[in-house]
Amino acid sequence: FPIRRAGIRTVPPCPPAPSLHWSTTMTDLIRPDEGVRVRGLRRVEFEQMVAQGLFEGEPIELLGGELVEMSPQGSPHGWAITRLNAMLAPLMGRGLEVRIQLPLAVDDVSLPEPDVAVTDVTTPSAHPLVAHAAIEVSVTSQRLDLVHKAPRYAAAGVPLYVVLDMTRARAVVHTDPAPEGYTAIEELGPDDTLDVLGEPIDLALLLSDRWRPDGTRITD
Image (cartoon, rainbow, N blue to C red; front, side):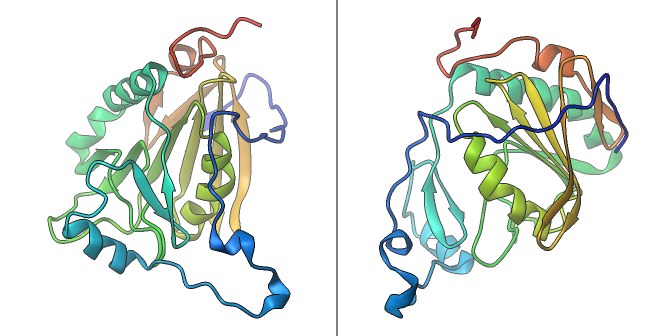
């Protein structure tokens, strides 16, 4: 995945987004010395529950055996996904699929739904197990995408994972996946270039401004 940078920047620590609400889980309440084991939800069990109509209309994803509620989509989020879909559409003519917010069965206890994923052609019988590339658009979900999802995509062998951070006008590019996580992480800005399987991503367009979830520009 060729990456040409106008300037290499160190990726700063990403604090939790203020509008991202985290619920207290049983795992949080139990101390390691209490000897209590918590059993998470398995992906196959989650899929059976979904097939029975549970969680209908609820924006949730299974991550590490826990159900995580996703933030509602603001206009910058939807705009970026639409632009990415158009940029990657030529891949469809090369025997690949560009999947928008659809499940990716990365492990036995996780079923994330990346905003954009490039996969081989799928079948109706099962969700794909891996992708050639995955992209998350972050407006309020930076910590979730960078801290919690990245290791799972890496362990599943997704070779390119991009977090498009709309509030900071940056793209955090993860490559070289390993079981413990990505071994190469770089931050790109609007003056840099990036391609996904040979298709150029227009960072100058996507990162031209910094955005709040309500669609207003961040000017300070």
